[in-house]
Amino acid sequence: MNIFDEDLNISGLIKYAEKEKVWLPEFQRPFVWDNNQIRLLIDSLYNNYTISSILLWEGGDELARRRVGARVKDIIIPEEKEDNVVYLLDGQQRTTALALAFTDKTIYRGNNTTKKESLNIYWDSEYKGDDPELRWIRDDEKVNLNGNGKYITLRNYEEKEIFRQFSSRFVKLKHAYNFDDNVIDTWYDISVEKEEIAMLRFKNDYNKKLNDLNLKILQRNVYDIEQKGSLEQVLEVFERINTKNTKLSIFDIMVAKTYRKYEKGYFDLRTYYKIINHTDSIKANYFENLDYIDLDNVSFNLDESDLLGITNIILRQKFKATEILKLTTPQLMENTKLLHDKFQFLVGFMNQQFNIEKEELWKYQPMMKFLASAISKFQDIDYSKQEFLKKWFWNTLLMNRYPGAQNERIAKDFDRICSDESLDTIMSKMLNDNTRNYNNIKNNNKENPEYFSASYNAKSQQIYRALVLLLKSKKAKDFYFGLEPVKSGASAYLLEEHHIFPKNSTLGKSITSKYSNHKNSDIINNIANIALITKDTNNKRIKARNPSDYILQFEQEYKEQGKYGEFINIMESQFISPDMLELLKKDDFEDFIFQRTQVIYEQIFSLCETE
Image (cartoon, rainbow, N blue to C red):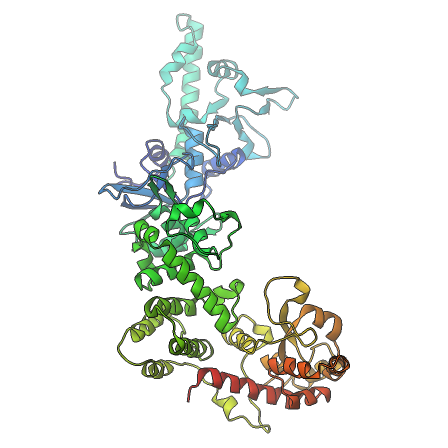
């Protein structure tokens, strides 16, 4: 039986589920539809409404899987045999619902492992109400027969009694899929002519209605999408389809592909990455870690699919997404501690060298990939390699060395560090890949000033995020409290991006008006007017005050405490020199923005050393 040899209809799909000819990959969630959703599905089919398509893939015995309707724990472990397996990648809720409604196949709902689902639905062929989906009646619900207040429950009747008493009004869905009408003969005493006539009349009417259900529901074509080829070849499809608004990813696929049973238990990729994300030391044996790590309290620093990419780079030095599928369970098991230690070193390196906290690692995922490959290649990161990686990072981020096709560029950089050339020579070649420069800032003049194209109003832009990280490179401190940037803790004391010249101050409004028809119309939001200030300082101490007002207050308070030198250090951590501090006291916006732009550029040049 080949599911792809014929046009698939609803009846055929049910049959393949019933006969276990299609399988659910492990990443598919349990069957969760309620009975009302099933009833609406039936009504949609009957009325020829679209129910979307299903996605099938015929592959090898390589993914952990279970039959349609099985318990989640009933996983079949792949043995990588030559057998072909048809996987249902998208549409399992609908397929399971149909199997439950039309067959007696054992079905489990949710995470229940003991209670089998039971569902008998009848078509009330005489229903005249305003809610057409109510023509599909469960045998356990009350039915108002004729709107006269008399209710019945079909489950309270034996099957033959339903048809003897109500004739062909109620049609059992399971009969439309599979029914031998010879059983009807046993419901009547055909030795009596009147009974025989009633039986023949009933059989004729009932079969007509079964044929109607068969034609309108079971013979409807399924819009199935057939995917052929290897797992690598269909990866893009896996990553693009959606089930209940949940995007299937390569991680979901790898969970199913790597699921294995061992003497001490099961290897599960989700658990594995909790171990990898555990911040303390771990043991080399995967199963030993399960005994002492509180996995429920482990948080992930990166998206799981990104973690897979980092894994593939550290263990195999491969950068393409499809290469991830070649990772094996034994390879992961054997390198548990190695991967953990390399990954934790990478996270620490990002934090120590670039002030990137765990919560923000996702913003720098391309850079993490190359750094992971370098850490894997270099083994020991001595001072020269550390300086090389720091210069590489700032050039890549600030000079936009990775526009588009990032994996290819990362692989190219990795090939360079694998060569016999010196790090200085390699860096010189890398600098040729820079796609951004700041020559307009370098050659700036007050008569016709130029500014960074980075605006608070476009915070998601790469250049803006890069320059905010640059502000952190001097360990920027809050104007008032002197706190350094953090992303966790009391929300009032988190350092955030705020305007030095507030937009709603009298001066801010004047600046906005002055530049309204200027090429720098958004200058009030330029990165040169942004500092890392706590919400508490901004909301309670700055608000809509001009710099001449709040800066003088802060300065005076520090002087009174005998800590004026500390105040100067705070301002310099925000790229504000003593000369610029004087400009703030005078509310001199233009000169301040011009000078701060130049100081930020000098920091870029210092970190990138492009000349």
